[in-house]
Image 1 (cartoon, rainbow over the protein chains, first blue to last red):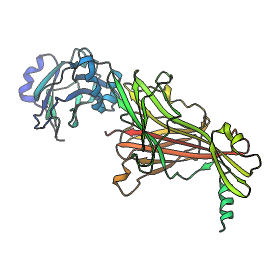
Image 2: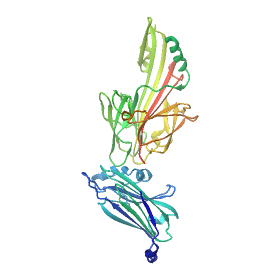
Image 3: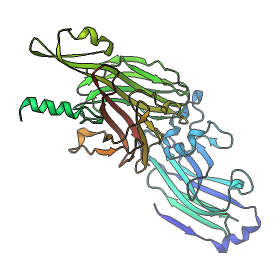
Image 4: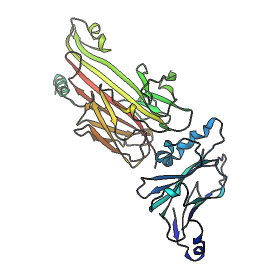
Length: 170
Length: 270
């Protein structure tokens, strides 16, 4: 896993008057496989010691009849053990359908749930993807909250995830 | 050494509470999954006695004494119970979220005796002893056997009520939840005998997949004074853990007691 952290001071400084936010961009790679299912993806924040979990998003097969898509939630096994097994799915504001290959962006307002519950400190953005009849991959992007200056950090997956980028705006 | 002297030594060695060498064959329950999500969770469990773990290549495990305890402590009825040549199998519907204990608990007696100068053996249930052994038998040696074979499966959030011991025989009390095991992490368990700490007992931990490697790769750990032992899982997969003890606390008069415990757990990758 390659990790790149850049403090983009010059161009983003102008944005400091806007509301503080965190933007996550997730690249779901196009795969050339015989049987393709869009991956289940979970994103959450972990405090440095792993003790506090803040769920951000869960993409799973919400349209399956009788909520049967929940059968494969446990394949995101780190998410499942940390928080997934405690939750009831679907969950308002958390779960949504799986996404097609491409780059997807999620923006979270620092003043609203769930980010307004974050105490200052070191965190990791964790993203876990599991694909039916396919593989599974987990990436971590460390960051400090709240951001003192505009910052970006990213991690690059090798199989089930492409680049995952986190952009923080103070 | 004469044969008689050897037998005498074996008999002497079995008087006090001590660990017994592992049996030639291993009895096991193997669930199709141990960590499940979703609203309609089921597991299929294979049950067999074999040399290699977890391959059915020797005998089907008798399911006469099978029971399943649900998260609420109530018995769950197994479905589609069948016995093949090499394995038995059954399904369990995990209707409620929580942790289920699947167990085969055997209780029997074994006796050897002499009748008209010939060595005889008898095996059966403890209450059949009186009729099973002729009144004129001599040199009667009786062993009571208590054996427990277990596995655990969890749908949704793990629960702990099913992890409590019954207080009879040799049992494992998980300190680390048995459906929350991950490669590279340390897990802790306690062995209890009749509900009391079973100290100084050897526990053998064997990873599955034996057929495709030359070495057993087993680990032996000994319980401390509180009956506690820990295992750091070297890798993911199913593991078989077993222990056995002998003592003279049998409820049968003049009998030795042999207690054995075996459990299958699944260790997930990180």
